[in-house]
Image (tube, rainbow, N blue to C red; front, side, top):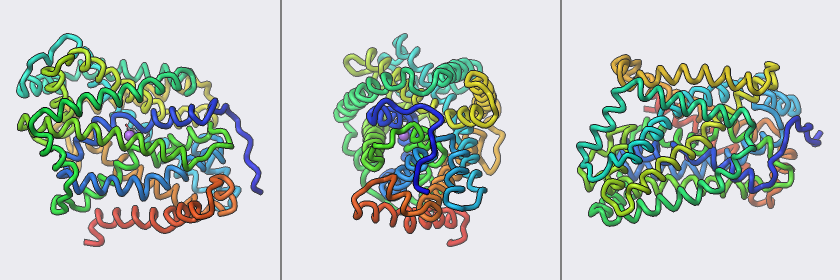
Amino acid sequence: MTDKPQSPHSEWSSRFAFILAATGSAVGLGNIWKFPYITGQNGGGAFVLIYLLCVLGLGIPIMIAEIMIGRRGRHNPINTLQALSAEAGADPRWVYLGRMGIAAGFLILAYYSVIAGWALDYIVKAFFGQFFHADATEINQQFQALMNSPFQQIVWHSLFMVLTMAVVVRGVKAGLEQAVRFLMPALFFLLLILVAYAMGSGAYQQGIHFLFSPDFSKINADAVLTAMGHAFFTLSLGMGSIMVYGSYLPGKVSIAKTTLYIAGADTIVALLAGIAIFPLVFANHLEAASGPGLIFQTLPLAFGSMTGGWLFGILFFVLLFFAALTSSISLIEPAVVWLVENRDMDRQKACIWSGAACWLLGVAVVFSFNIWSEHTLFGKNLFELLDYLTANLMLPLGGLGIAVFAGWVMSNAITAQELELPQRFYQIWLFFIKYIAPPAVFFVFLHVLGVLG
Ligand code: PHE
Ligand code: NA
């Protein structure tokens, strides 16, 4: 009963290759674009603290669970859940968890690609020296001009989507290992340069204070949900990405240790981005809560006035683009694997269909920043709706499902065998996955619904 299902597809060349790919998936726009702006919108320190607690208490145990499920199932999320629930004698409807995940990845990529397109546009701006000695007003005007041009955004979004699908079509292994191996240290280095610049900006203390001194009067149920949802989003959890990557993982690898590396790297990149950005916000009297444009309205100010800013600006947006690319391929990979394994498509056809559908939805997202910005539902435009639906609802729900599945449906004999942890650590993981993660997600949902007042 405990022998493993046969793998229908290839494995990573090493544990290191898996760490690189999973880190590539985790570190992306979520860290550098989204974390700063939602932190700004939700008042800073208290929000950051809740996010960090969610990474520790929910993200890490659930990432361990999701990688483990993937490695044991060795298929796309739907077939994996089918096989493992059959193995456990559980309800076959667990496959819906896989379906929701595939849908979530697809919906996220539609707007992710648009934002990555902004980064592409900023490579060009940086190259032509548009930030040179520009003040906050000019930088803001440049960003607004991009927002007001559906055409420009669609061009970049299209290019990004084509590049994503071009990588996915060749399979996740080709090129990815190399790209991430160089990308992560380079990104880290550039963030350090930006942090050094922020230290001299005159508002460093204020930025640090904003990020790290919690003021809980700024927090409501929705902010807690956003912080929790972001913990899932930033770690690529709850939708099958890490599950699919785990399905390529060789059997002999310590899942828990690997998880700590990935979560650690992801968290450090996000915090560095925050530390680089908020001093600039305050030094230039900008609005911390200004929304999705935040990094595009702040970092160019640094590039425009620092020594070597021309080169660093180009490098930064190139790296941001690559970071987005290594995440975007993992967003669509579950859908592609599913089409290949269940719909009998070849990989190329699966890529074309899923990419085209995602592109179309992305075009609608572009319009939500300009010609359709007044069209709202529950006070949210299409971009905001998709973001809320995926990051705040689908991913936490998916994470909840994964926790329940790993903790309550799979047998302890199997999970213990897969994880091969020292008894004490296994017990801690099991406790979090059974008794902490599911109730925590559940209670946050109830709060948002207003059930608990
Ligand atoms: N983790 C990625 C980021 O922070 C986004 C992502 C979410 C990727 C879910 C895959 C799955 O940018
Ligand atoms: Na991330």
